[in-house]
Each structure stands twice: as structure tokens, then as C-alpha cells.
View 1 (tube, rainbow, N blue to C red):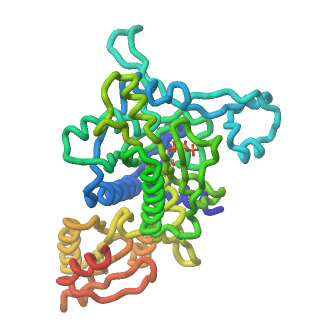
View 2 (spheres, rainbow, N blue to C red):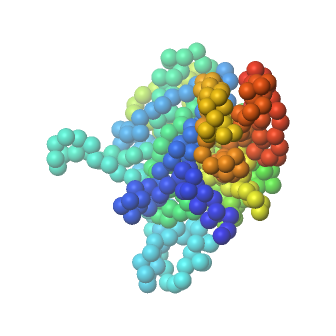
View 3 (cartoon, rainbow, N blue to C red):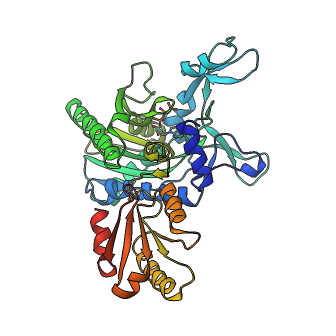
Length: 422
Ligand code: ATP
């Protein structure tokens, strides 16, 4: 099995990610997060939100509706230009993106139709009178819900330019070739900041560089290996319709360098167009601000974190996840399951730790098997309550990455983990 197959198999086996609607044969490009995956995803989003919104003075958050007035998508240019070039194989009628040369080359026939523009917006129908429903779009990116609220945010807070609006939420795209596990899905989540600045070249350059580095540093701080990350500037002809400059942060995936997230200089495109299409004034201090956007996929981040942290040797498989992202921080075991004093003590400790940190209980099988199971889901610390605990109120704490154990007093566990999770 190659690395990707191992990660996909572990993700399924241990409850990170399942194929969407699997019992009905699935639905291409959709994935369901299981017990471990949903915890990990929440940890990732919470961490992002904490660092982007809660710890900063210059960014506030919104949570806008997925369904929007269709005019918003005309204004943003998505109805006209949110397209990928589609080609069809004349022999087997499979469809591909003509801007993905690797996929085109790998196909068994080489007899293509001319490329056509294919719009990625997913349509939905709203209204209660059959036949008179109105066509709407599920948002193709989460950005629009931020821009349409620009004035609301300025008027309802004390924030001043330069400032950002952050959002996390689902987006939907009728991708021509969903694939590589969750990497390209038809339903996925994004985490974005639209950072509004004065419309000046120097400001634009300064903040564009700032956000590039800020995002790179964030991924490094999550523990992603430096050699697996790089910047890539977009060429003039690949830039999206709204972008004045665009750089991707790429990850060295098992199938080659791939886009992880994007930093886009959107200029005044969005606010100007919304002003034009809505007739509402979108200026701030008499000018239309520029927007430097950072846009990251939650699912892609999770996938690359899994791939990057996967480790195996002849004894064990370990997800060496950053403890802050790991689904559980701590697992608590009673050394034996049939000695009431030990079980009771372990249970008390488990319930106490659980109040502050995500903690899991395991009393099945032997300790070795329990370690193995926790390593596979990336739990950084396993605590065992044993006979010695009954005498001196200490426990063993076993470190996931080194597999070393140390004896720690129960009374100092809180500060022990606080220190580790700094
Ligand atoms: P690609 O060229 O890979 O299709 P894109 O350039 O269209 O991506 P953007 O529109 O810039 O992507 O979206 C910003 C981020 O949202 C991407 O960097 C990625 O992390 C995430 N993303 C975009 N499309 C998908 C998708 N289909 N599935 C999962 N994540 C996605």
C-alpha cells in the first residue's frame, strides 16, 4: 500500500472520514467525518478561529447564510466566470479538466472534444409553490457572505481599516473531477479572512506579503514539515477573475505538489461590484477598500495533517499530530479491569481530566493494545492507573512519539498538561 492508501484506510478504520452516503453506494465528491474526524476538524477550526479572531484586535468574525440572493453571485462574477475548462473523451465520454495536464495525459484514450467553460456553481430551488420556485446557488466560496456585510460590520463594531472579517463555513462546487480522497470534494469547508486595506499599491504589497508569511508560519506551527510546504505564484493566465495577485501555499502531497490554500489580492473587485449591483454605498471614508484574502480548505488541511503526521515502524502506526489538533489529548487506562479500587481511581481521574481536556477511557484488552489503538488516532498521552497509584497517588504518563513513560503525581497532572500544551 502506498502512503495515501494507508491514510485513507486508517481514516475509515478509525473513524476519521467515511465515504458520503456509503450504504447507498456513495455520492461522488462527498465525505462524512466520523467520531475522530469531527473532533479533529473542530479542533482545527477552533484553533484557527482563536488565532485569527479571538487573539487579534483587527479581525472580527461573521457566520453568513449559505443561500444568498442570486444577484450576489452575478455581482461577484461567479455566474459568468466561475468556470473550469471541461473536455470530454470522445471514446468513453468521461469528462476532465483540460487545465490539469497530468489527468489528461494519464487517460487511456487521447481523443478530446474542444474545451468548454463549465460553471461550478451548484443550483438549488427555493419556494413553496410547485413550478414557481426560484433558482438559487449554494455558495461556491464563502467570501461573498462577508463582502455583502461589509457595511453592517463597519456600522455595528468599532473596527477601523485596516481590518479583517473572518468566516468558516461550507462551500459547494460541481467539480468536474472530484478526487484524491477529500482533496477535491463537491461539498467542503473553507476558513477565510477578507482583510480590508486602503487602496494604495504599497499597502497592498505590504499586506499581501504579511498574510503570505503569516499563513505559512501557521502551518509550520501546526507541525507540518517545512520541506513539504512552498509558495507558488499564480501566472497571469491562471489568476481568478477577481485577483490582482495570487500566491498558493502548496503541500507536497503523495501525488505531487498541490494547492493547500490561497492568498489573493482581490483589489476592490467585490465591494465595487456589490455597490454597482445593489445600488448600496460600499465606501469607507470616501473610498472603496481593497481586499487581501486568505482562503484555506478545512478538509484539505485535515487531509494534509493526516498525511504529514503518518508514521509507522515495524511495531506501530502513529499519527504524530500536534496535540492541539489531535482528537483526544489524553487516554486514561486502569491497569487491570477487574480490580475495583484501581478502576474507581482511574474513573475518577478520567472524569476530572475530561472537564478540561478531551479525554478518552479504555479498559479493553491489554495495555499494549490500548497504546497501539491510541497511537493510531494520535492521542499524545496515555495515563495508566496501577497498583502503585493506590499507594502514592502517582500514575504513569506515556508519550506517544517517544513511547517513554514517566511517573507523575496526580496532583500535578493539570500543570503537567498545561505546560505540554503551551
Ligand atoms: P483548485 O484549483 O485546487 O480547484 P481553487 O484554486 O479553485 O482550487 P480557491 O477557489 O482558491 O481554490 O479556494 C480556496 C481554498 O479552498 C483552496 O485552496 C482549497 O484549500 C479549498 N478548496 C477549493 N476547492 C476545493 C474542493 N473542491 N475541495 C476541497 N477543498 C477545496
